[in-house]
Length: 568
Image 1 (tube, rainbow, N blue to C red):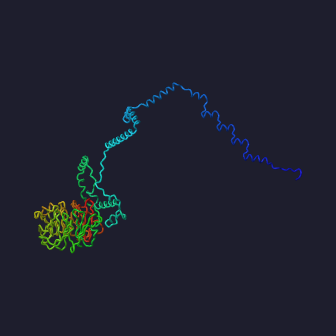
Image 2: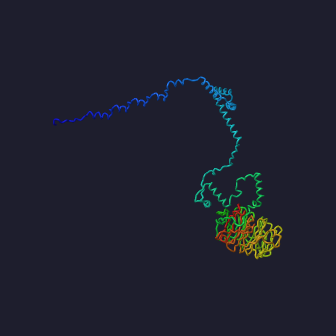
């Protein structure tokens, strides 16, 4: 190192002071910031002056003196006002006092009860319980007065099996027609509802005997209003139940013999007079009975008559027996419905005929009319199977019909001459020639006793009034129906006499339904484009007109539901 040069030593003190300031050894300014406030900060932290003291409640002495000074007169007035108000609030109305006396008793009674309760707490408890019971009875009596309670009716007998929730198998062959949607089982309630719907659909609604709802009571005002309505509308309301003409409301049902089909020709069809059963017969030597429901028409019973192709079969008037004849036999069969017994009848006392083929059943009693040869008709009784009376026509018998009361017989010969007989006296009442008839083929009398229909070889059907047939030597028909062009071989009136079915077995689809009141043919029957009726062998209506059925040569029995009539 040379002389004159200076050596600059590092100043260690200065940096230490600076670091001290950074590490916390601060000066007065930093001290003020870290908590050593001055007078201003002291004011901010709570050391307030007189103004803040006033805000916090430290009022000056003058204000405290003003509050401590009060006016005695004003205080007395305020006190008197308050007393009066309290007295008014404490006063009780007469009604309030009366209510308190009724509920709690008078003051003397209340004091006595309080004293008794203090002496015997258990007695007071028993008194409260008795009061509660009396109150319950009182409330019950009030409720009974307000709304009388009806006695609960209990069932005389309850079947425990009805309460069991079981599923019924609907795949059984007797329940297959109840299946909808492919279900395999149904509950009892569902099965009952399904059967109810099926029955109502077959019957066209619930029958009158199945409706359990009580009829509404009619007041005098209702009857007066009904009388006024009837008097103003005339006969329109009275004729509402009449069958309308033009279009026949009907529904095609399953064939009657669906459960027993056959390829052989059917020969006859008829409904039972009292049961919901129908019968078909055919050349296949069978007599079949079906339950009519419009859907499956299950088979009830089938009879097989060996070597006996059935030509005609009919129920008796009471429906207890059935008679069947063949084509070339003198033998005929009687089937007793109640006993289920088939009886062959080989011979009839007093009958000298080679065969028994055509016959008609009297609507009253047990008489049957057998058609004989050489113009004879024989009245047979089924009780003893003997002929009681024989009548003779001029010519061979071609058609017969009974009146609704069974006292009058209409018969026709092949040449169109009509004979009217009184069966009570066996006397001929009148004879006349069927208008325009060359050869007579069929005949029917209406159940109401007003009309007589005759069919001819040409297909013309004449409708006569019965009154003129009984007295006039040449009655004029009300109208001649010419819708058939082949021999009319089937004629039948409906039970209400509003419909007349006329058909022919000579050609296919030769069947018409006539509206008797207007003597016009329904335009919509038969309605199907394809053949259904074919050659009609026989026709029949149910006892109340709800169903119409026919038998054809194809072994089928088409069944129709006539919707206008509600009952079977």
